[in-house]
Length: 365
Length: 257
Image (tube, rainbow over all chains, first blue to last red; front, side):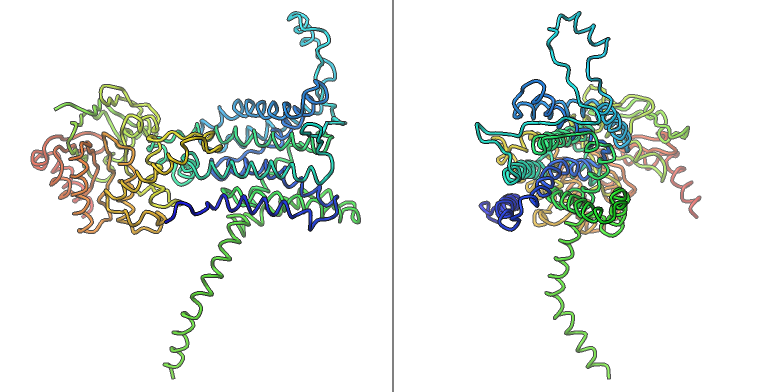
């Protein structure tokens, strides 16, 4: 057993980098890079949700809300407060982390699927807040501001309600602005690969082992000193931070955000992405995000011919969820890997298996 | 002889049914203490109460002078109490070595953050944890099964793996829940010498078992439960001649006949 053998994680990361670097050579149409950019953004979100579902065994039906917190914090800070997007991004991630801690703490101390219910409600609340956020401070807050001697010029953050927030600046390094589709493609995939690498590191560590142990047997893990509730909260907070990072990248890449993108129903799409990719398989996140984004695009194309079809996307996504759960409960990645392994093993053993069958035929007159 | 674990008026009710009722006894450090009793006497429940897997509904458990009853299981593990399970509770999704590596959880420090960024010392700690795990596998004779998935091990080895995993926490008190059940005669003999070796290494053993011959031959003290109540306590010989113990076991046999 050699210690210098490159780890599977390193190989996967290098492979990922190579694929991303070469993709624009194949996809020459710059419009076709847009869905690929969305895949990178959703991959970041799905990795976190995948760890929550696959390793902590909890479902969140409110990740669209953390996605929204990242996007709106980034957008508001960079358009209304003159912050650099690079400062707005971690601010959104921090806010999402704190909110996740507050939402998750009471639920994750209990056994069972309380988190799914709490996050569903939380997702609805955030969506309604985005829609109904007042354009000027409510009287009570304005009075409080005056009492605290806040300068009257302190801007009041607004979400733009149903019409959303336009003119969000693109990310830039010095004077280099990421504004073409190709530049955004590389930028978002750099983040996605980094997120994949960091999460793969977690999976192959003391904490990842503890999480897998919880998955294997909660009772045994606890008696070995694993603080199950604490780890569930850690993973939930991490997943919220990743969702906020994705949201922030979305805001700066698209330049415009509005509530429908963050509708609580979108949270179900994210869960579908996790299930398709396979729970507890962070590389499956790419496939899960890819399938749903490309399917959505295809539905839009078809929808141009059949205008009513686009309204059925939720039904179609739900149908996929049900079919995957029935036929590929381990997700696409694991099912495909097992099928390939079985095929390889089958080829290796086939001649051996055929031989006795043949001799049997001979033996029986 | 000092008491390592002291159990006072321990009670556990399930919907009004008393699984463990007002049980008091103590376990001496460095000894092998066995808990026996007919089926349904509350033995496993009592073990679950000590390891924190179940919270008691009444009574107090003191370990080295500190009250541990009511603590969650991961806190009790920190005190130095480890256990195995009646129905093997291995992490079937992991290899034998990885199972034992989880046992090193409290003896390593890596956090979510340090793991993510592979901070200084992460790789070295991982290597150390694996080496430690292999050492514990060696102790129970499973060194060559290190990279075998736990689910692929034969039953007898799974039991040993659970013991290795528990030992990896470096406990002062080891709770064995029916460690011999389902083992062949030869495996049982190996288990006995392993238990002696563990005891000789300074670990106190508290075991629940059905196998009367095994219990009587290796334990220093025996506690007998029946219908959740303690009916006898003493040396194996004293307990074997106790009228209430004989009645409890005969009663069970009569009921089975």
